[in-house]
Length: 127
Image (cartoon, rainbow, N blue to C red):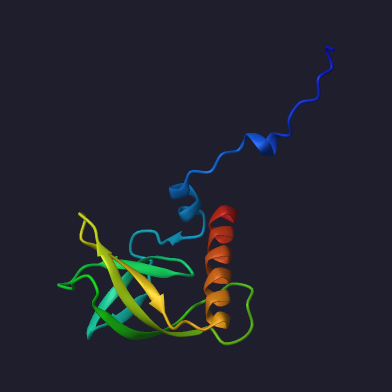
């Protein structure tokens, strides 16, 4: 018959695995990342997710690790915003950016990181 039922629009959306990764990562605008100390050197965070962060290489090597501590300014959040976790460099790309993963990050801090990324993305969209 001529009135065939159309598929819902949501069935037509396809996700590329790289796009999905970016959906949950917040990229700071130039010069707006926050500082952390990694292996005795102050680095500026370029992007962050609940799984890790990235910063410019300052002579580090893959597998270098340290324990880091930083506080997040989370919009619309009351409670402790202190993050204390291990950080390990997984890879260093061709643009000399260290891509790191959080280690030994408690679930409540993982949720705080998710909340931070979401709130920062919402704030960017609002402005």
